[in-house]
Length: 127
Length: 123
Image 1 (cartoon, rainbow over the protein chains, first blue to last red):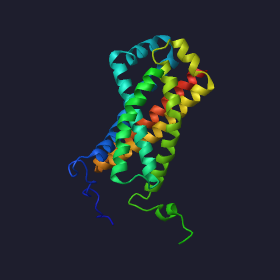
Image 2: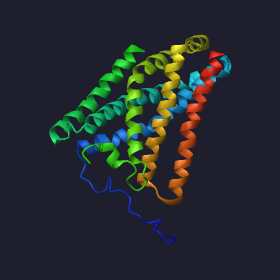
Image 3: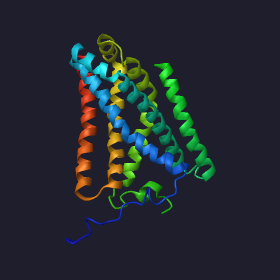
Image 4: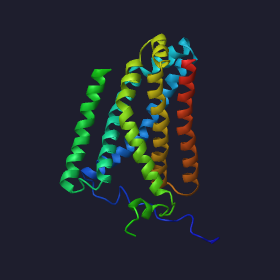
């Protein structure tokens, strides 16, 4: 067992193997949006910790997070959050064994794209 | 065999033996996050750009603090498991280990930072 293979197992085939289609692209973006939200999480917790520290430091971080660049990052994060959430709903549906045929899966893909934009606009109006 | 559930049949299988639990944890946390997301967005989105007094006043109330705290803790647990899959898909060997360790520290560090901040705001 000491000479067991540790280094050169194959990684899962991805990106370079498949011809892109709606299913794979929407799935890849679920992964990208999910992981990219680490940036928003860091910013929000930084902002919370600044609020806990006191008014002066809070003003600095609040200025950063509500600057043009901050607004852009947070708005894109809301879009990413809704997209990822709808991707999660799609996963929950698929996990029950439903909607796995190509035509329905494509509809769910477009639903995620359109739905995330609509929910982002609604969020921006609501807050 | 007829009385065995689907889950029982797959538990502990696969190369890491934890795939079933990983998937089920992602399912549970994703539903929790779906329920919390609208409330989290309304609370935090509404407070971004508000004065320090407003932010502290709002987040020192129990329900907003509960929603923000729960969202960060559950969200970062979900984030850690998601980043784990990303790293395991694209990296091997030492870089995989370093990636798994550093993203775990980052995710739980963010969750702890949020909880500590909420506690200090409330006190």
